[in-house]
Image (tube, rainbow, N blue to C red; front, side, top):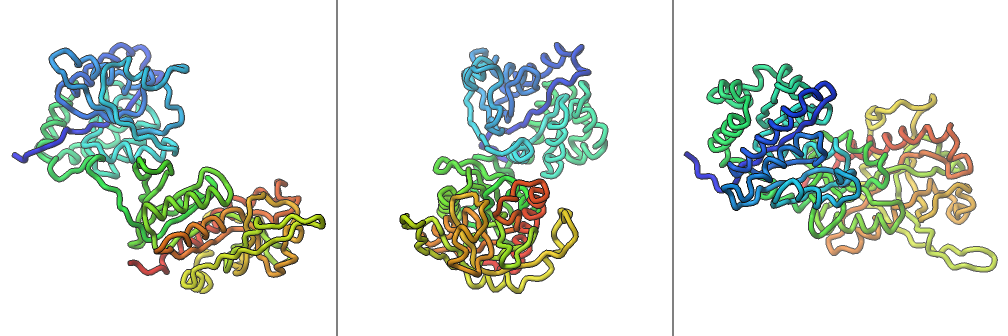
Length: 466
């Protein structure tokens, strides 16, 4: 028998459903007993909620009840969830509400993303997943557990998502557990039987498995992607299969997403706000922690119609001029040029890139053909709606567009000894004029975000690996 030097880890997920209300006491007692059995057998419990209608709540009540009753060891609980909506009751602090359920050793893994982003992270460190009742969130966890090949125990007694998962998977559930455990899975209908099943399976298989505490996030990446706005970030993430939220770090509050595309290790981040400063801070954190070879800024921009730039087009930056460096004079501001160059290899590849147009998934709002423009862009902290001639395009007649983060990202790249190559691509969502908030213009934002994401992710295939 293998020697195991860590505790088994179980994710418990589920909740009461409307049709279960008549069965409330049975549901609560079942979860309570499950928690008590898990704690008595020294399991680590992954939970995501303490709301009274959830299986997590009652499981933790049961686990907490074992302290001082034959066990001096506090049950270990990992809370993996979004920070949004953390509280479970009124204004009481989360920690107060949790300790009311019992004495625990608690580790928090809190993320700034949505539940859909966090589900894979809840499943990843688990040795097994127990589903009780539940609805859409529980069903998502089941799908993620399937994807990660984690064994599932769906308690069908209470219906809900757990019941539908049990019915849908059928014989496949037995395949997850293996031939020797298939019959025991069918008989695991009580908390003691469920816990014993998981413990025996885990003892047989645990030596090759790692927990979230054992894993070390890759400290290097090939390419870092910066997406300033949520809509820009989502446009990129939907094109990257298998991405996941990186575990939070003690030395940085930034949320990072990691993935692998065409043998490239990617790390993706979105600044907390628009503008050069936030972009510079986020880029600096990304470079410091992951040391990428290249950093790519992907998003939307205002285009210069005087240069033939139209809504929905693509701007590939050749250089970025920071217009915020100015001398204020009585006759108007005097822009003092600070320019940042783009990495030559990435720029060359971007100029020659073909086939990216076919990768755009969002329907174009009106008829027309997307064009790629290569040239200089302006960057500053102002949302521009007065036209680029007012901003300084008359000083730089070949300006293609204006945006708000490029100079910050480029400067951050230059401040490291091993400076990563910098590249920027923008989809044109408006023309930086007084019409930018009109419905006819706003409708271009999804298309512009998707076009920039399509170009950037297609360009990844032209970048050599380390």
